[in-house]
Amino acid sequence: MHIGYIGLGIMGRPCVLNLLKAGHRVSVWARRRESAAPLLEAGAHWADSPAALAAEVEVLVSNVSDTADVEAVLLGENGAARGARPGLVCVDMSTIAPNGARRIAAALAERGIDFLDCPVSGGEVGAVNGTLTIMVGGRAEALEKAMPALRAMGQTITRIGDSGAGQVAKACNQIAVAVGVAAVAEIVKLARACDVDPAPVRAALLGGFAQSRVLDVHGQRMIDDNYAPGFKAKLHAKDMHIVLDTAREQGISLPAAERTMQLIDQLVAQGDGELDSSAIARLIWQQN
Image (cartoon, rainbow, N blue to C red; front, side, top):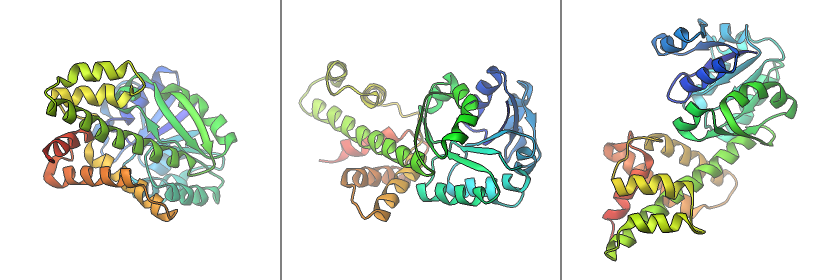
């Protein structure tokens, strides 16, 4: 397929390389052309704008920071919708608000363009290895068309439901990760308070019902006191605000998620937004 890609950051670059390895023709656009240099050397083609990119591809993938950025690259001046032909499938792998995804889908549908909200889990390692978990909202027919592109980037691809459903699933994922990080920090805190080495505690728990990817990866981070990202706290804070805003829109409370969001916000406010979000352990350990 001829696939377009917008957003060439820590996730986008390896995804493009995997698309190329799978034999697809890939054209790219980013705000800074220099960020595309290694991909152009690997065989990708440059487009001068999102509109120009959309005019030549069958599937257009975007992976940017937030709802406003997705709206800008797809619906804004020189956005993809300006150049797209009817039948284009836009696949957005960003993490944005579910209502934002529905709004973008509706606007693109008016132009005969399909939109799939396809947030991912798996981080940079998953992007490099092509093993991302991809949560999909949108029409099944559009997913079928986009599937060759998604299979080059992800291992587990699940259609959750209609537009916005993928983002709801990602919000649920971010609750599990954030609250899980806080729980692991409390495990380490309790073990140390009892003069027990948390390393064998973690090893034992990984063999039982408490085992989880969060305990495995972030437990080791905490034992090592090494918070190189990973997933930056400032991005996790953005995601958790989406979680709590969505909950408020539905008239429900998520007390564990809200408390953990406050810790992540505190980490960002003190200037540590570039650290992995598991660095909230330091805040938890400072509390009595």
